[in-house]
Image (cartoon, rainbow, N blue to C red; front, top):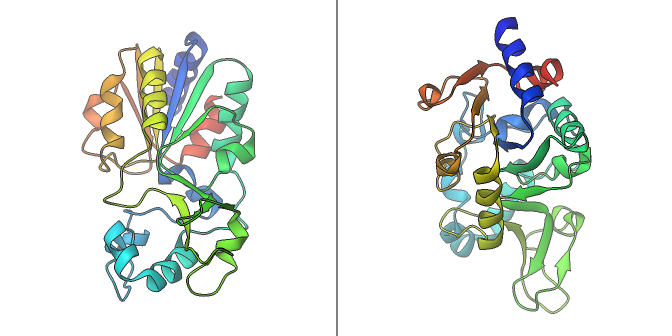
Length: 239
């Protein structure tokens, strides 16, 4: 591991345009469950298959049940950034890191100080009325009972991308543009099984392609450097 950490340090030092692409494993050290690990959200014994609950069709057909699940498992009012978030913000401030691309909806990168963040799956911190478009904050949805309703009577929906919904075109194009320009891409905390997000790495044409993940993935062999470990612990040593 020490040899790999040293190699990661050297890659970071020689790179001038680093992009970080992160998944749920980036936030587990903040106490937020991931989805696909042994104790992840999708492994829970819930009255509906958790993966189905997070679909657009379930949201439409079982709206009240969707919000019950959403508040309990996707809202983390007390979560704080961990070392991964802080080290990435530090890298950005130094001028080396050009963008963070995240599949998470917790807003912890911004809370840690990162400025250029592409949120592929939206943010639980933003909510909007599907009828009048009015914005509502996190607490409005989190602290409401049942289906959160705007003063106009419309349902207030979290600005998160559910299964069967499209990613935001502007966010996608910004993320792809950043990856294309990068000379180093650090992919971390993701099983690389969620598409289209996982397919973004194919746009990378730079020199240093790194994967940091707790468990092995089917994509490990595609990376120049693979480190199996906690993202925050690795970045604490490497940055």
